[in-house]
Length: 299
Image 1 (cartoon, rainbow, N blue to C red):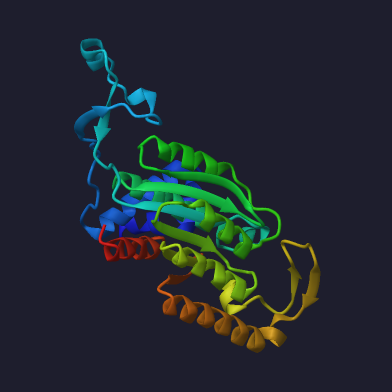
Image 2: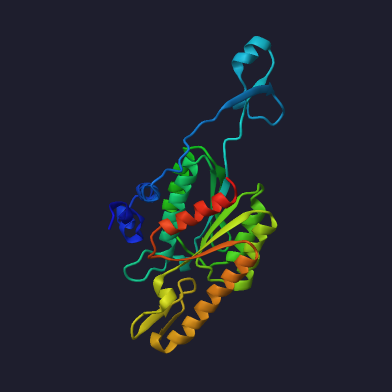
């Protein structure tokens, strides 16, 4: 395996422990794989002075100009960001599931979102973060300052998945909170009522946002290869049942395939970019999907 590829494998980067190091390794591995850098550096170009208006931030007042003219003027800057993006992560208990040899869906989501946040800020894009279960538990509005990545990484590292999920309700709330048009990237297993989830995704489109949905599932949730006997526990309600998976394999496979295909088709028909990813997949697929989406938006 090429050296850089190991930093795109979930089971490898998870051993690094530190989320900032993980994000950095994923981004650097990804860039090496592209053989070209999308980084544009940072620069905020001073454009002009204008007279102070009520509501302007005091920190932008130029006191030297005030000393000379006895009038308040503020520094006006050109638009700093190319894109405004919101990373919305499902933090419900079901996201904590991980089969043997794989990382949890939640860990996959936070590692991927950390790498995306780092990549975006390096591109001078503004990025925000929302963590939700039955409601929005944490909301950080988009910001493009280089120092903001530290706050995002701290928040991701400290959060633990818990509670039940009401993806539709939480996403509807988020759609109402985001005032400016941008890109909304959602990370979830979408274990909720299908129609209500789809309606919530459409809510973002109705408000003129672009939407990139990452449907994260553990490999065993896709292939149901769980051996001869298994104890199934609902991670949100605690309810348990013991059964033999091979009895359920055919019906489960049909159900999960149908569920995924219906979500995919509905997303396609409403111009929502849908991506099914299992948690053993290298991170570069999702990162490429993001860059493709960004390019489509003309940013």
